[in-house]
Image 1 (cartoon, rainbow, N blue to C red):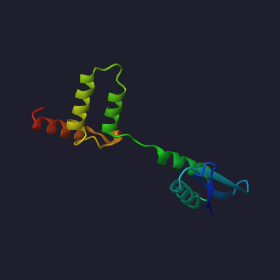
Image 2: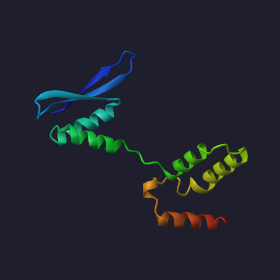
Image 3: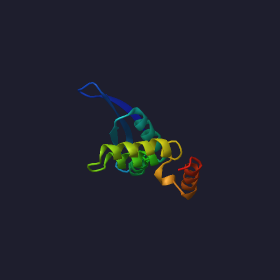
Image 4: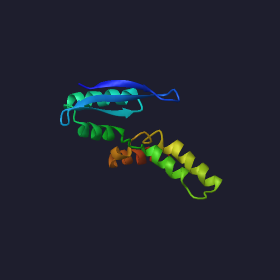
Length: 129
């Protein structure tokens, strides 16, 4: 059975350690994470999978993978433009704010499909764009 230990750092901030007994080496092991919620997740994973740290670590990594939204990707593109004019930046930002964010800006890029793009195109046509 895994447990959680709160650790106070020298600067006063906290970290959390999920602790368990590894059945293969028969020794106590621990992993320190930044948030209590991560430690709770790790504890639940370890308890559910028989204290297998390899499976738990992979699950944590998979859980951390954050897929950006369409709006975030376009915003990043705008932010990374090399030597754009002020007019270009303003135009691109306006197009993003008016035409993308409200319709498909919230959609994770891995979920964007042709139906959503067709819906977006139809919404643009309805605006006369």
